[in-house]
Length: 285
Image (cartoon, rainbow, N blue to C red; front, top):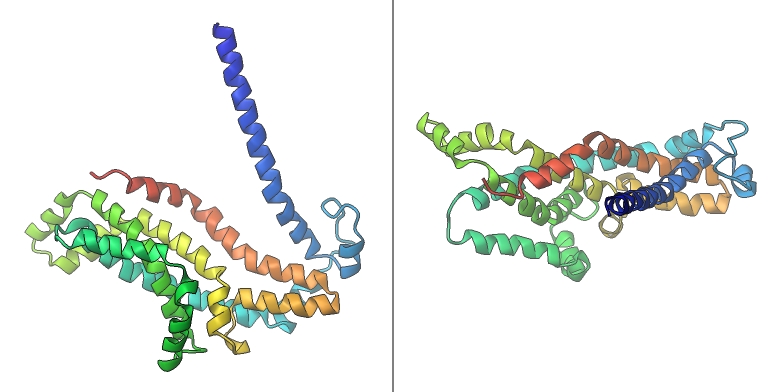
């Protein structure tokens, strides 16, 4: 009986490892294929029989030069970095203050406000596209950094407030009481005591908001039409159309790598904080 139990456990582990290995291959194979193709000329991309194991001959780095300089990916990259950084910073600032009040102060209206913000996660952006478009147009924010930043910030606040509210609620209230006894004002308690303790939660929502804003396409497509203001997803779409006509698939794959690399770096460096931040706010202290 014991042997059968051990054999069953080993079989389950083997199946689990097989499933994880299969998933790993399905995820990594396309990424390696794109990376290798970004160093190849178009003829080698199209005529390759085994694209993953066929190394670039010769190793062609000119694809990245074409994508970065000729297709203005440097400008798209700056736009995405600026818009994403400001949007994430604004979202964290506003969302953390709102979540702190909702999670720590015993106001009667707090549960209703929490549900109100949570309702923002249930409303698709497309439902309010037409009135939102006319509102942005009337305010003079169409084709501006400010307009897109405000839209990204507003769209990210419901998720940010929902996550951070549970996180602030899990922090011990005795720390805030001790700071108030020492003479700290409510703002000082928040900025100097509670906010540093919420760093895992802040990093968690920052990562998710970064990924969502960096890869966002539809909203930028609607509210940005000027070439100088386009973000990386819009630039990649333009590059895709242009290079398909030129049959320059190497430059196209180089553009994909430029878009993909910052996301992989951020997620790879900070992935541990995602689990820590979510689980830390799961149980109230």
